[in-house]
Amino acid sequence: MHKGRLEAFSDGVVAIIITIMVLEMKVPHGVELGELHSIWPVFLSYVLSFVNVGLYWNNHHHLFQVVKHVNGATLWANLHLLFWLSLFPFTTGWMGENHFAKWPVVVYGAVLILAATAYYILVRVLLRHHGTDSALAKAIGSDFKGRISVVIYAIGIALAFLTPWLGVLLYAAVAIIWLVPDRRIEKTLEH
Image 1 (cartoon, rainbow, N blue to C red):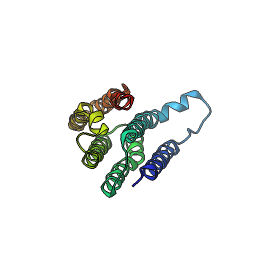
Image 2: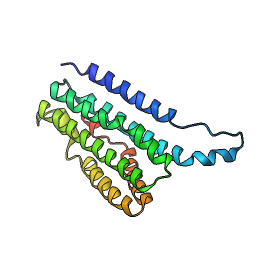
Image 3: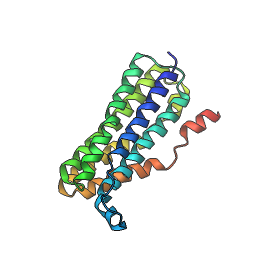
């Protein structure tokens, strides 16, 4: 199967997810700059989620630059990833509206770790479909950042039970790790 429809559908879903997240931010009632103070938790949770969804979109795009074709298992693995990403607006809103309380931060972390796991599964399905000697396999390599991200999310969830802000800081740390451009796929495409 050609990969074009999967990419187009995924792009559309990500665009909708981001749109829903921004629509969840309610405009403050008042005209003074100080009124913005009341929405800072919602805005901060939106920024964190926007960056995370953007990172998934960016990495998904790069991943599919080396993918030649897809199969049924790939379609299901991609839908699995999109399912977890589609929960970002809910968990983002819950966390922001409740000023980063324990359970919303824990559930947000659970969605992060499940999305990361779904992305890992998508990559493994693609590797199985393309083979160990493929350009994709060479580009993915050991996937250290992917594996360490899941570990940091798990630690963040555990720490969120003690102090929710520690969990949020670790979730943000993973985003920062992924903000550093990963050149593996670009290098593979150059060769």
